[in-house]
Length: 86
Image (cartoon, rainbow, N blue to C red; front, side):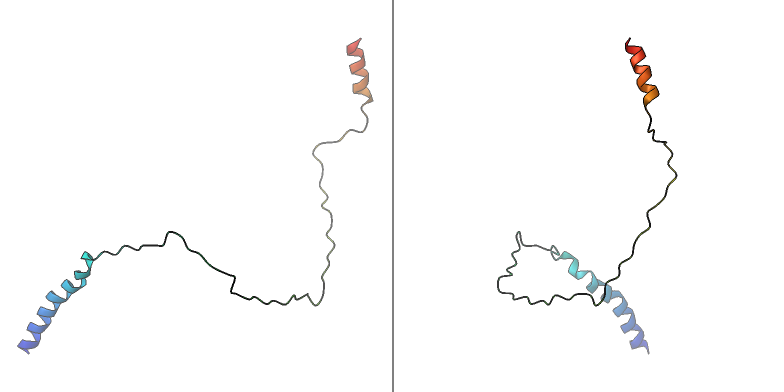
């Protein structure tokens, strides 16, 4: 029993040291400067599929209350501008 305790105490003190042993290594990742992908050797086959049915919905036009009233008769303003020019 005493041997088991000593082994347990030694393993608790020595095992964490193994976890930090790898910190001295260089963990940098080096990537290539340029990556080329060649698609010339690939053969791609596809089939054009059309939908079985078409769904056509007619949208209603939105009806808004205009905040600005558009004038169709400018005769009053035209008369005023002629009077100002005289």
